[in-house]
Length: 580
Image 1 (cartoon, one colour):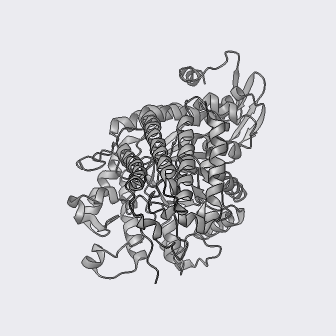
Image 2: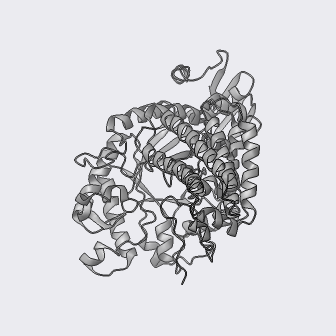
Image 3: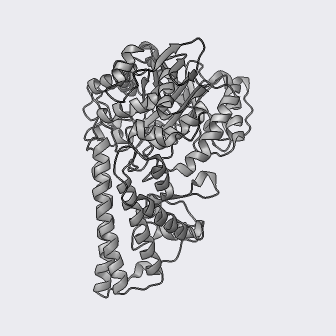
């Protein structure tokens, strides 16, 4: 412990009179006024974190692995220096695994287009992070993709020979396995961990592209199993223990191709088809009741697996950490995992749709979830957050008002991004939100007003850029007001002025977005969101220009969509869906 404490002193102040004493057992730390009893390095660090926050008592985590998976591929590629700072906080929270999700953002030898222009990590960068994590008792391992989710690589024509569809690698093609071996060889050198997450999830359309043309029609499951066995064999060559997301097994076996099912008859024939030399990761980010988790864990067991459980800290398609959804999904997931004796639990942080979430704010979700897993008090979360991440936990949670909760699990409420990315002339996102959740825009506006008041004057520091959150709230209020005014066709000077104010609010968001991004990430990928925001600002100004020119607004005469369809991604296609 002496070496570890000396190492930590660079990052956090440690009282000189504190005594550490190792005791037998596992997952346990006992904290008194001057002594921390612990059963392992993770428990010692969790105990130290609780001690510094003022907690005393006995705490136990039933999971031998409590981990984090961080998306380093959806535009945002975090700097190694930032990750190191977070590792210290994560270790003090009691985490001991960190998976780096990298679809193509690593410098695969002999493949110069891997992560080209996207901030790909060098071998030396990853080894540096691995060394740092090892000192803190954090196992760092790869989470890559070896089938689907490969669109950022397959967009290059030189990879057409290994492309089944625009996002899925071509199974049964020898060049594909030559490429995968390069990928796995690189990862085996990057980290001392002998575990690797191969992905293999959401490969919908497998065998329906070039594979169909080259090999003819075939059951996708047979293709999937052959491919999986080939990739497992490559892992074994490099002495790696593979894990994969489990959804493809369920989608293929279920008659409706669903993942989340309450019943499935697992026959001996089905069981024999699933390779046993791979770990399955059961991911469920949505359900609020323990029953759903219990049913799915039971079915995994029927297949012969004790799965790794993956829950989520809600960041995908969010501009700010969504505490409302996280606090509804994490506790039942943990409870069900404990009841069924699962050993490993990870929390994922995804960057879907551009990684525009302020991921510093998501550390609040990891702080909350650690308290749930360790059964410790919520009373010291504010203190822990300030000590470990330099942030204001209560104000970060207040800014979570940028999502309006709704009583539907899979919708996860209305997020600010659904409205921010909505075009200020077509207004498809706002119209749809009103159809799905009557009154939700006024509710969003009210929440943002309250949050804006709480965030006014808040100092920008670690753990979330509170000034950026305030700017987002201000933009949301102005945009909803503009929509409501234009919906009434009040196209006068007052509306033109409101549109100009919204454009200026978007400019402020552009500035604060850049600040929080550059604090955390490599500069690559930032341009995607900057272009979206700059386009949004100019579309606000287009409203003002059209009013001043006394031009027509035919966009406002569009009928509402006859069905309530899913929100999101309005920056990609503001199209009313075709209705048969």
